[in-house]
Length: 121
Length: 109
Image 1 (cartoon, rainbow over the protein chains, first blue to last red):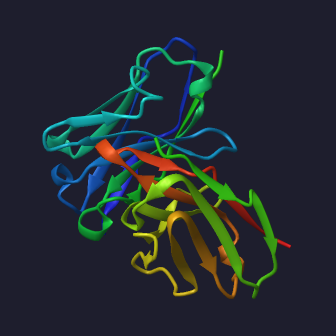
Image 2 (cartoon, rainbow over the protein chains, first blue to last red; image 1 turned 180 degrees about the horizontal axis):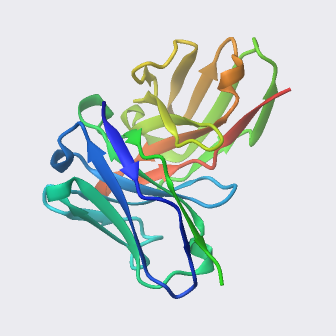
């Protein structure tokens, strides 16, 4: 069964850096776009960007361009989301999700369990 | 940029009733690019409907999607206790950009 397993919860201070991960299994990781979605406490879903692990082609939402970096290491079937300097407003749950293919090519058909990032002094 | 507006914000119904959730796009969109997700507390979203009206694998036929142009709907018939959750519509746009609606919370009356 397709699985996306995310790294564990993080507690950080403002100004610190962070890199969270999303490991895919039981499918051809290189050949599916992986997206990241933010969900702030009690709020809705916000698309941050996507990456194609096969060639690292990356697209960002204008809202997140320059604020985060999305990357992938196809040799270990893992995608990453990183911040160079966290802010309190980055406190949220972050989900990775796979963009499907064929009829599912315009949706996220599998989701990770989420990584809770808390930024507090 | 497409903006999706969902209504109502909260819908209160009883088990066995039928729920109709609305998603309005700021401009006409192809049905191909409209999807619906369900999210329960403490869980990631789950894909329900793609292409505006096609059910994803394993989704009960109580869930149905409809609409075209700017107006889309998710209908849930014969509400079960496990259906009470938050529902999001989603548009897939150019350059692989995704947009989500703000969500509708379906709560037990």
